[in-house]
Length: 364
Image (cartoon, rainbow, N blue to C red; front, side, top):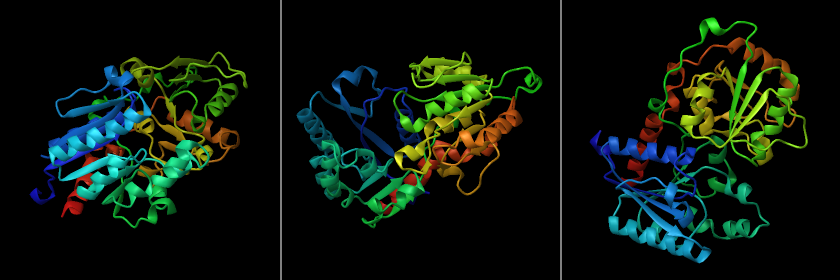
């Protein structure tokens, strides 16, 4: 409907990872969806100078660089000036840390702040970064016109409810059109073929629960493929059934996911004091048709628990105490695929549309 169309949206965020990162893929997809609806969208990205070569390039995509802390503040100032010159109807800002320029912008233009994490828990209280965030977060959050949360848990947190802002919960999404529909293997489901298990993550993230995957590899004679992981742990033995690939592009790991039977999502979110999430990697697993094991509540599947998600408790011993369930789940789904029709609601177009409707109401 025409009354829901937003004429000009400025997307403002700070991000240093390259075009293969899930976050940047999500932002690109959101921008494309809003443009397809008839909106005019301009992107304003704060980025370190060393990362520019791997940045996304587009005519409506501006980069504001820095190479020091002082330069970072200046980059935010420059981005805000550029936004004001562009004269948007609304600003969509992926929250990171407070910068003085943000306060000025939020006072002049309606601003929606996307909340992807509980910053109080993420940054803590004792580090300089945490103390800075604790002191200054109010200067942006209380002037925002509304919040978009990626989980209900964040929406309900007292760290955000105190601002009494209009809000919306929209879990992370992906563009399903970017992924081929993978058919079930059918005849390949013979008993003597090993189950193939895949995990996509990154080094040093304790909440991934990599140690629990290694435990599974010692207990189950399956083939485990860990993408984004290259360091073998020194605290636990690793069998020959574990293959570490390190960082890979989607094109590089595509054959691995196509031939996998089961995927593993985050298994230790409790280590971040969180119970709910909507990880992009799990949406990618599902787009490949992979039944997935997770250890938390998924925002897009809270209302019902589909049989293609094995949701084990969010606890330190969740893998150890549910080994039989994991084995049963994998054997049940070996060679089978999740049907695309069962996951249409994780598509970014569906989610971007919800956000644009929310923003149009705030403008009115």
